[in-house]
Length: 235
Image 1 (tube, rainbow, N blue to C red):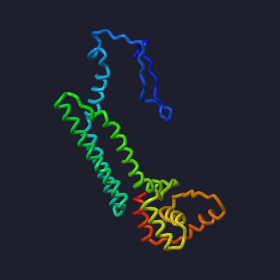
Image 2 (cartoon, helix red, strand yellow):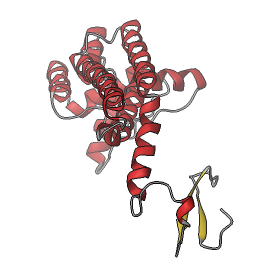
Image 3 (cartoon, rainbow, N blue to C red):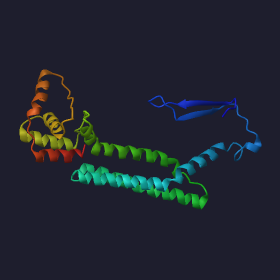
Image 4 (cartoon, helix red, strand yellow):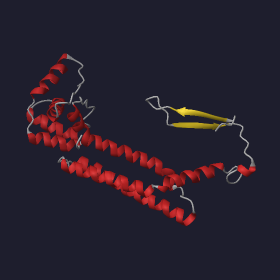
């Protein structure tokens, strides 16, 4: 690390800290006795090393995500959200991805036993696991985010809570029953869900402003709120 041809550059995160770094080598000449592997074969050595690093705990990692997924499913049951077809689909897709992770881990271990190397599957496992983590955290936030804000008194600003599709169709059905606009139902639903929700609706005219204010007087029934909750999928 102290050789003149080595340059170390810290990788800073958003807080200004740096736990990782980049190491650059320039004009390097490695004596033959210190060389690892064949000449010009450094990338193969590095690739194999990384493959073994990622595969060493592959099955443990799959078991870890299996436990988290089961906890999210149980949390959805406890919150009474399993009637939502949208949430059920998301949880089903998550469950399938965790199963694929375990199968992929078993394939990597089998390649090591059979060939001594983890094979190409280990090269994509990091990307696959990263996207799976994003899915896990997104669903966890949808299930727990509002509850945490209520516990700590934090304002929750929703962004596009009602997306086109089944959710929008449910909103329009409720709006027709009350003789109001769809956006008024969306605002009324948000206000009913929690006291910490702070919706910021778009207002482009005085008429639009009046419509947004009138949303506070839309009296949704409990059945309508549950129907909207189910259509949105636990968000």
